[in-house]
Length: 300
Ligand SMILES: *[C@@H]1O[C@H](CO)[C@@H](O)[C@H](O)[C@H]1NC(C)=O
Ligand SMILES: [Zn+2]
Image 1 (cartoon, rainbow, N blue to C red):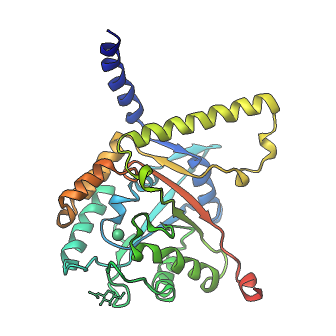
Image 2 (image 1 turned 90 degrees about the horizontal axis):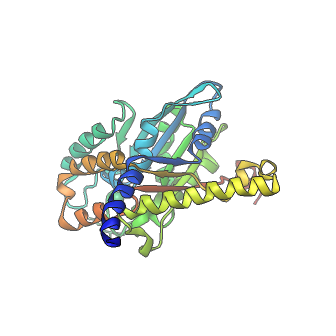
């Protein structure tokens, strides 16, 4: 009897939880992104990836959320322009041309506007399982895109590169180099996608459920704390330990799946396992990287 009840309730509960996307700290995050520009100008967010398919495999929850973003906060409509720069054609197996074509379709699924994405084909940035890319080269390649489009925030891999691929791992180093030495003010903000320990990577559809549960607890705790101690307003939001989190709903997940399906040349059996089991298909957590100012760099 009890198990039958569970058999009915659990799917209903899951369907309810998976139906919606959840953006924690995003209103604040996006507000912050926007307020870096001049008043009322949109936030311009640049994703920097290493290979065609990175956007679908790792960054989809954030991409879908930012691309659908139109939110009212204090009567202002916040807006975000999304840009994407992929630093190689993914030519490790000689499939560079094919993979570029596939990526065009994948970006169409997300709905990134024409003229806001680019695939770089540089001899010094080739898809290679063992090669680290030179930070100076990365900085030189990315710089013109940042300057020309007035990018206010850059999103990329962290030092563990999610999958420990050395190409991924090179990106934060190149971007820190760019932001700390090569640009004048205002310097864009840099966020890196947090790599998780292996056991946490493969929660599949449980990932959004757990993440939402976590966030709900945090929210409740926040209110209880405020009620009891009345102090959170004294804690500047910047100092909070929480990080921006994007949790996909079922529709966002399907978008990610559809875009991955466009990367046909990459759909070998273990990638199917990945898209079913991976947490990054559902949840993205971001860490802000503080950029030492040019002056500081000179002094140190
Ligand atoms: C990949 O990089 C390594 C050095 O890290 C180099 O020896 C090798 O030739 C490269 N492979 C290709 C196909 O370029
Ligand atoms: Zn990659």
